[in-house]
Figure 1 (cartoon, rainbow, N blue to C red):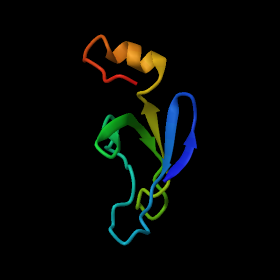
Figure 2 (tube, rainbow, N blue to C red; figure 1 turned 180 degrees about the vertical axis):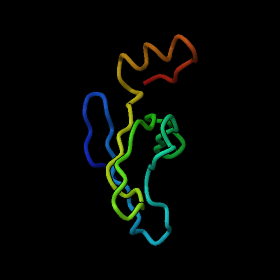
Figure 3 (tube, one colour; figure 1 turned 90 degrees about the vertical axis):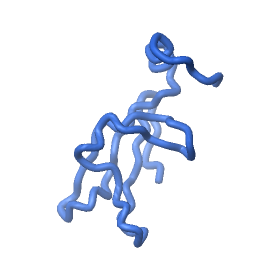
Length: 82
């Protein structure tokens, strides 16, 4: 679930209480994709693991829809229209 949206970051609240054991973004996930359906909307940057180790705290994800991110990425890959 969405925790906070800033001009550079998408913060998500992990959810280990969904009975699927999925937790959330955890240590070792940095650089992985943040997906909305089949669309990559961000890149994992950090996570805050709680004391139970379930990774259900807030994670930070760099947004890929910003002008600066799109400008950088367009040097390497074709981007879809906005």
